[in-house]
Length: 449
Image (tube, rainbow, N blue to C red):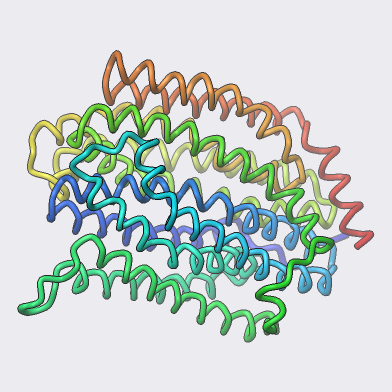
């Protein structure tokens, strides 16, 4: 079967890169605004972001599963099945989002205690987490609906939605945080209010794009009713993928707790460095998402050799791009860090971390790109099974022990070691074609749909 009008990898990765760039830039701007309030506000901002990223693994079950299943269906020309699958995601998002909301509203003190949050930030961080709760529900819808748009190759439309959503967030955050005229603003809480409004705008625009580009108009029933039969293939892909991510986030939170023990200054340095590194990883992240879309379609149409060649090319491009950007970030650290702080000790510490991050980011390339490709073939159990040991021993226990012995540099060495251990395991799986039987099974399921 000839694959119809398959676009180039860069044509898909480019708009996705734009989306990530926008999202991370707004997060960076929020951190910058918070840092000009106090290091405590910056630490609270960074801590809350890590909590949200962990909880959003619930939504990524749906986003990951929807993206893979729909691309496979479209590759196999099963268009009606893809429509039913897309609409079924809305009800699942509602119930998952309500669970996340309840956890943020009722469990914020428990979260902060578990993370060893310094006493100085507790009065600020607790209410901030609660304010983020309603925005989390809307974010779940946006993540899933954007994944479905991209699966249909409407990547430019998805980018347009993100420009409007993130742009409105930033435009609202500045006056809400810093105030206007005699009004002093809401400080850190203004970022959460702006987030809620912008996510509402994003949801509305996604609904517009669904109707215009895919002729999908949800009814009231779609927002509340769960459809287990339709969602089963989505969960078969999404649950293992999100489980791996949840395992990573849990181990990462151990490292975050180790960082918090080092004090507010270390927590702020950690937050500044990770926010900057997001600009390094987003190229590989965009390539990984584009690979997932294209490999899913190639698997649905039975073109396995093309999928294999595509992933090898993507890894090569990711290593060159991420390695080069990580080196540039380390060289420019003395100037880049002045965006956040004037403290010479914080700047020097962050520069050390960024040199270690060259190893971290090149190792991360394999995990972002190859794991996404494995998932798109239906090979979803291996990445989880191969990663568990590294999560527990290298990332979790390793960051705890290295942090106690060497401080923040030790924690970042543990990050780099974990990425390389897992990355090499993923690349070995792809290179030795362990994914092929799963791809054949996925192709047969699509053709039976």
